[in-house]
Image (cartoon, rainbow, N blue to C red):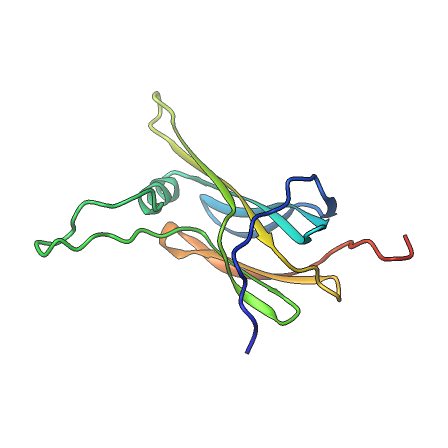
Length: 163
């Protein structure tokens, strides 16, 4: 069984760019992109910078789903809507689990003339492990907002001791 990620604080230094942009998942009106990945030596690990863009009905669904706090009761018994969010799973070596954002911001914009809604999430995820083989397996999904699940193997340009 794989070990699980332990929540930790990402380092404040800039780190080293080890992977550039890649489209992780998309459907008409919604897409999730890995903007870039930075490696850090102390503490050792990776920071993944993700962006999600949605428009139209997907933006409205994403806006409704974001967990910003308690929701209004849905039923007479006082049950609350749980909401949902973009789910990122990462596997590096024998570590594999869902990763929670260390920082995240959301923006919703509505065009007053057309009524078109745009929704954006920008998030950073800290992975406290550098892959010995230079590979990180990343899965992303948000079915409640219309984003299908997809998995990618990232080959990272990690510095070696020779460089």
